[in-house]
Image (cartoon, rainbow, N blue to C red; front, side, top):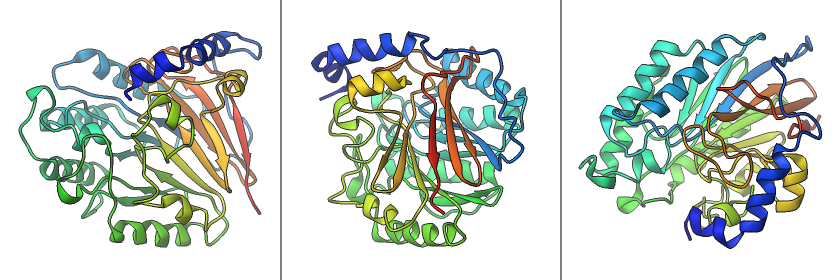
Length: 332
């Protein structure tokens, strides 16, 4: 079932989520929000699904505007996370354009994951005839060059202010898939060992992957049958071994939902399951479903000693969804 069919099958919830998010019962916009608390250890902007195409200018303009918005922030921003689908058709000119935009306009480190459109959708609409293995290699090469790292595969870790971001992704096993992903034993062991190191001193650790975990953040409603299949890759059990793990994903194009909309639909942008915090990001480059439909949305994540605050916002209009803020207490 695709996204459109899912919307039609859940049309009442879809419509209510949009309406209840737009109702400003707690206010939906302010000209500026500062995390004025002096004890904020790290501020990271979270977006996903930019869907850049070399010859399509609107989504390129959205990304440039978002990066300029970050550069003008009243408080210091430490990094930007982009949780996959950075391109639309996995062609090299488009991935080159994405990183050219970052090189020109990003003023903070950008931690990027690859999504199904960056690897699985090779040949889509006859845009490119490369293989999935070649598309994966292109992502690794461009991302390594931009971040100044030496990852040998489609997963890596990156530190920001003493906190670890662990990026995982599709390894294209046995030819790969169109929308699904597979992880080998090496990557599963990498995730486990990196989480062990990152959380050893009590700090939270952040796992970034394009795909949501099966059945969480409304994946089974918004985008059925396109997730991390836990029977093949049980990342959930690995993360549950450690305290203060945050899992950040995109893919399902679910819009920002107010707290009231989340109660009605039964799923939210930020959820906790068995000790792990799951963050589902809206699409940045395309319209969204089951919540605010507008593009250019994401979440500002503020990390403190005792808690993490997630503030949804729009990076084009600078509107903040103050009726959709989530605070997660850290385990001490």
